[in-house]
Image (tube, rainbow, N blue to C red; front, side):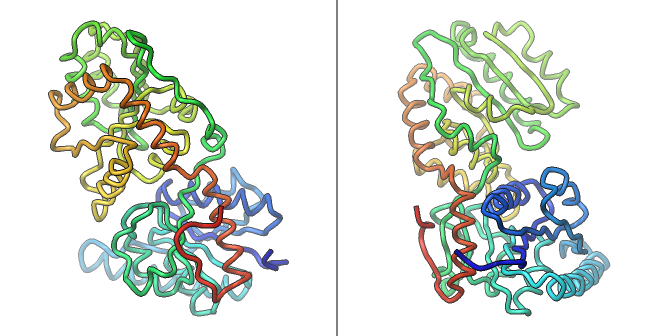
Length: 379
């Protein structure tokens, strides 16, 4: 075991939940092993300490370098202030290692760690190395990845890759062994629709029309649970009214996603990293509709790897029409063997123990700083 006595492991994460979920899962795993953990984040990560009071939270400045010239100048200024703050933190905390989870809020902390010769690991959740992680890759001794293949990684950095998977929330990991209930012939089929943190309007527009084109006997079998934008709820209820579905739940937010994933026979979702990690941890088949405006089109890259592994079907948003979805659903409902095979493939692809693998990789890096482990973290 690495000797990190009195020296915390710093997690640098900010921005969206996609960066925070794996950071929180790693923090829990490291704390369970008796390690000290600190989080460096921006203002959006301040609430992190509410769920993990054992983690000390430090806030530094940062900004994404986009927009007009004035915005770029402000971002550079904020990054400079962030780097000063991060350097002060390095001197004060003397960390054993820094783990960056992508997003521009991680940049000052990782740079400061590299300048201070602190071991750095990056974690990439998507199938395309993110822009912040591309900036920081040269500073990292290891780069932990969730996908078997990751684009935009320079050849000289590839020997540092180690596949750990993407850690999921404890409530999801606890369901890793929940068996897939094969739809019975003529029996109910539970479909779960999620479109990210606030739903996806295209789902509320296309799915009702698609279900309306199914034969009445198929519609009667469908029990639909759909996450909608709050402003779309009433329109969605009206669209489904009188359709003769076996069951219907429309909500702006699901607080019991792990239980709903376990219960569903098929999910229709975006292809964000956290969604994919949860689907494959529990092992559920999905129709993936990548968000077309994601940075570097990483959701399409994510979805294609799942489809290649036989776990999901990809429908690019321009092709996500009522006719196309109705045809896909009809084929799947009439051939449940395809759903069962995809569920098995998803469970085999997922890495439910990603938090353990990532913690192992971090501690191994600390104990063996010059030893680059490749491929997958030790089982």
